[in-house]
Length: 295
Image (cartoon, rainbow, N blue to C red; front, side, top):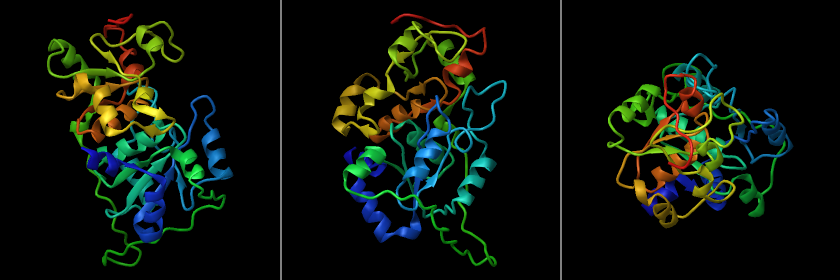
């Protein structure tokens, strides 16, 4: 279990060593983003980022266009995500390390990579704050063009990642409805939002307040000991003790902060599914039941 945690969550020194030893097979991605100021992440990136890092925007790069379903941050389709990885010159041997300043956005990229079949992905423990506290510099220059790996098929051909959607990592609205219809016996349903939103005391973003009946509140921030800093494997095991023998469905407001719980569970060997549309998708359908309070 500890080995899996270490594979997914990298300390700054490990990333620095990797950048020196395997620069052509390493891609660092800055995922900083704020929902209340959607240009702040790009500005922060331009003011200083890890050397060679590219920037990923939650709404432009890590989400698809909004529609009648899918919530506020629908998943990008396979073609769009493949185009993004092509722009970044990601190949099957590229290890992608995502970072931010809170944990949520880096986890979203990590999950998308896993969902689309690219397992060589990790997040930076402590985010950019840990990087600077470790004494490493930030850069303001745009990253150099990454090398293109030749496949032998012709000039300029690149060994691209062969994306495939892992449907076993994803839950849909229908899956959650089926979970409710089965009497909640097959697995746990985890709500990753803060308890006031879970209880329905407040709802700043969506038209209905509350939670999906039968869900348990596991606020994503409780998997972290500090911003972007995951708790140890032993502490996470205690935190998720009630769902260790289940295969939870995990949701939040729009499928972003829930990725922190999904990653933390994965790090201790618990495989879960992300309800990507999350509450913003569920509450769109007035036929879907809603619960309030602690129950």
